[in-house]
Image (cartoon, rainbow, N blue to C red; front, side):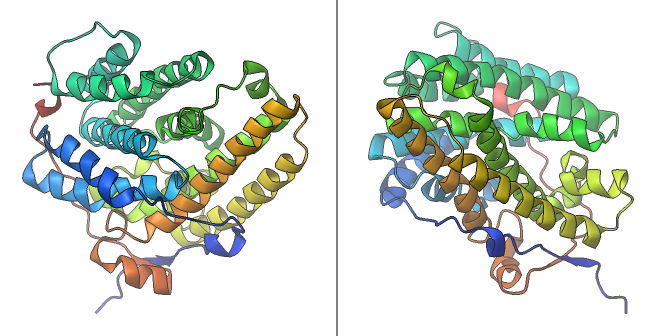
Length: 344
């Protein structure tokens, strides 16, 4: 009997000195958000079960542990909204994914937009909560990132339709946007009550730390989610697949490469934080809090990945203990949702 194909995950915790925490509002506010998103009944029973296994509210608890009750609830709503857009578009061709994304984008950009769709209603709910206290600078940046996110999610679907895998440099640019990590980072200022001037985000050292943190989240997410994605036939949008193709690596070597590069990114991140310039005491204090928030996202993403069934199924505790992932049989239609249900 052949041994199932498997690979060892890189030990990213070993090179992550950042400390984790969990938000104290997780159970109460998280339950409110879960009830809110489930009230829209957007998925089939099977898709809904998978959606709930991801424990999106737990992800928010790990990645925004400092958020107050209202801010935490808003972040939960947003991550649930993102997962809706992501899961729906994963099952669509390029044209339909772009149409789905456009509903989200139109709703975010125009408070008067209303096409009657469920996705529009969900997005309106989030937008109202976010706009109550987000400052003008952070709102402008957030909406710009919304545009980039939808463009790249749509492009991802078009690439999937053509069965095309990008080269490494092109993929990193795409992944930074279609992962929605910039949108998640975009919530930092809303949560912290900040509205940093654009000159901070124009600074190359600040952005060096920013991109290193964002890339750490993306690369960790891809190696952890690889089995889930190859099972569903979605592995083209994964750094592991890109590394296998571009560098002619086998699966284990690609996984090892992710671990080595994660260490490079961590060193880059920590070094850049030490070299940040000064914008004056008040702005510097805000920048320091922002950078602490990026650290929580990097570490929180690692912790959450081994506390749910989203990536490793019912064996997630075993995978956490052993670091070994056994590849699942391909089942691309496993999580098919009702066609068009998101826009009814």
